[in-house]
Length: 328
Image 1 (spheres, rainbow, N blue to C red):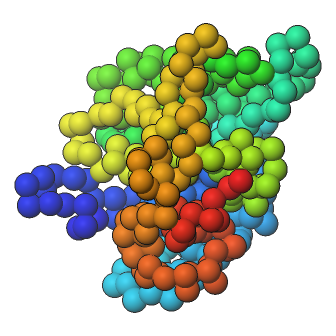
Image 2 (image 1 turned 180 degrees about the horizontal axis):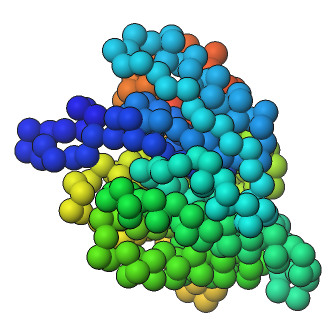
């Protein structure tokens, strides 16, 4: 896309028309990626288990394009209803979909209170299937087509939980650690091909907002703490995908500003500094700084007039003034 070029660095990849497959596309990072890649005029293949949410997202994308004056013709997203527990069907689905340029393995799940001595085998298996087995199956199904075409990019969404182990997260942490190890090994396997393999490992991120859960236990864990949002991670993915073809980002690990490495006996992983982020004399009213990067960029201006779109599922608290609409 032309806006990604600069006078001093003109070699960024143009993703116009690229076929981008996103799993768990109506939730969190997947949904944010759908918007970002759609804005770059990509052909989206959205995979999710909820057909209703898929249709709603596609309609929102198309409506957004119709309400703005763009020179490019919109491409209707291809919608694929699929349950990640049906790993055995992924190869057949890939044959039906055909080649993709970018594969974003975003599907993942977390179960509350997953203490090691309390987890049931079926709960363990559900998480292993979704977080680990299904992403591997997607890679094995689509990477041969990438090799035959001479290009492709695999993005596996991992987590800082791959390194920052914490209590009540035994299965989740282990699946993310395994996914990261698999990503590294897959990069070795594909080193003599044009296929790029990247892991994305975010720290504390609030995707509960998208499901209107900010007043739930998941949302309240961010009291007086500003986490990352799905758009932050989507931007990292866009950066990786638009690097010149000879550049491969192996992993992007990121934390929220007031988060650090988790240690049971060391420094607390989170400093609850509120929206000031710990800056002296700053009460955090400066969320307008984010508007310049998001509200204006998305063509909705910097006013509270965007409230009409607030509950549509597209905007996030990052775009709002005053910060009073943050979870918690």
